[in-house]
Length: 337
Image (cartoon, rainbow, N blue to C red; front, side, top):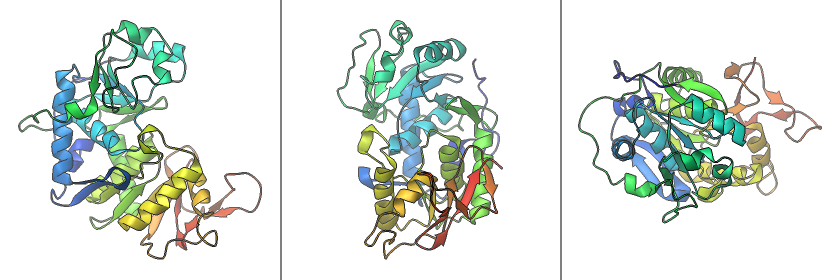
């Protein structure tokens, strides 16, 4: 399955074009655990540089990158860069048969991973037989596959950005396949606009995405809503570069980020929210400097705002229903109607 190359016809037609149309001097991406803070101009420049690097190693319009990169700055840079190339991202399947089928169905051009020795790369011999580049976030990590060239992610950021032009991806083109579900740029932007409207987002907001970016809720509702409003995206880089951690870890770093960045809006799930509510001294005490005003909590599959849902069953099972609140701030629910 190959995607045709078409140029953006209007502002906001792709994820990358949202970045281009925003106030370039405004803060765009903050990842405190990585000491990352980019304006929209810096974010766009880095994404264009990465796009150029990806093109040099074989990425092209219609191609697909397999990636397991978690909620770190590199993830957003990657998805924006692929927008400029006209390529898409895809989460790796969990078994060899599914991976073989995926390699047959899509024009998988390469792999972008945290670690080139990751277990999922050993699921099948197919990857070894494809001379596709493996881009690793771990410097000097070559992995065990001599048939595939391993590239340091940071080297790709050193490329010169392409001059002028609009992002290749348009509304109808594939942004990614997340957990088997396809999402186009247009669908992601629609989710973002719905969330931005529902939450009354403005460019002054700071949006904390404490939910995987490799999901329509994360990259679509959370990130796209912030970019649509010209707001800042905050990423709690949970568990460092190597993983997203368990709910207690996500909760700890999310609360830290909410306090450090003055985040005003939170996107999370019920597991993280419950763990957040168990923190503090005494438990349930939010930071004194909390500036949170609203948020959205994913309560199940689906992308509908569940307006009448104010509490949900405990994510641990049993007990009284859990109010969708943190620090006294009411959250909206999103899931299947």
